[in-house]
Length: 361
Image (cartoon, rainbow, N blue to C red; front, side, top):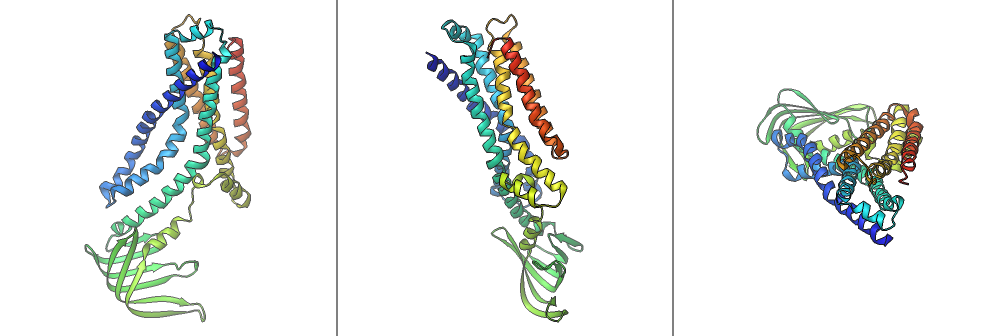
């Protein structure tokens, strides 16, 4: 009988989660995707690139909203069980409150595991993919932002074009830093040229021009004349963007290695804070389970079940906001990281105290 009730409650919780979470996540995802619509409206960006971009945002949204989705799912399931007197039936058959809560805590452990996988594996991978797609989109719009008659900074390059038509260029000046030679600047000038985008790479093909570069052997500037010369702007944009790699793109191991190797205290603190933030967030699901067990497994309550559900949701929401705020604040004040774990322990002990006081656990 015990296993039947356990499986029954667990099945309802999982079913509710996979109904509620897509709805909530999609609503947040669509809202977050609106800001990227401007890329299509103002630039010549393909629909495929747009959808690839917003799909990379999905894991971060899912990993953040999953605990609140689980909280809503638990509230709906136990509220329905309360109103339909199923809790009373279970207890009349000899089941205790702790045994009824067991399925809830197994479910919360499942949710915590999912959040941990999202935070430590899927989100860093999606951010890496997002960076690559942003580079491709940047390459697609690079030529569209190059305005004729002005000096335009594109990655490590400075491009000047006197006149630009649909595909042709007139009087071109390009100054760029050669790869792995940050102390040198090469200059290209040409009377005319064309540009094209192939496989998300921006190429400028120049005609009848000169290329000035430093001869490393005698430290003299050489001037070379050319009839045709191809310049890959995308390569310099990629080299420029790789300089800035966000913390969210790194795995747990990479965060630890970065914290050990870097001499920048600010970067070190951010890596340590991000490492612990990903470990702390899954505990939200465990705290939510204790809150649900306090407010929703109480068949003899004189107050309405709706009021109990509201209190449970409010407490769960406040706990999630406080934990996320503390975890994010640790990026600036790394000494607060131990207090995050201490706050989790204290919160669980306080909630467990109320649970024992009400004879739920």
